[in-house]
Image (cartoon, rainbow, N blue to C red; front, top):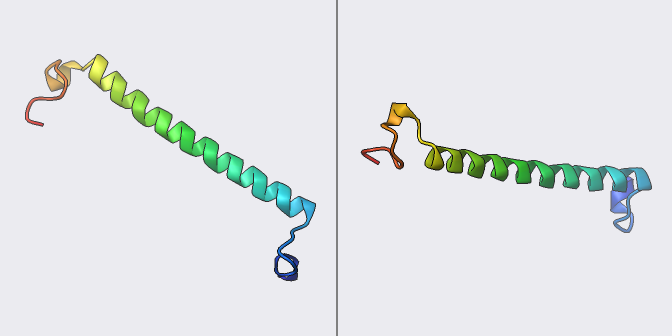
Length: 60
């Protein structure tokens, strides 16, 4: 508990873990938004027969 409270400095192992955690978080957010827009454009450019083959679906 003292390591972060003393002058706000962390050990090199903790700094590397924090850096890796932030990188993984940013990468996961990029992948989430990429998948979200991929699904949107797939639905809008090639609408399926179940929704009448039109985009946006009728009634929306």
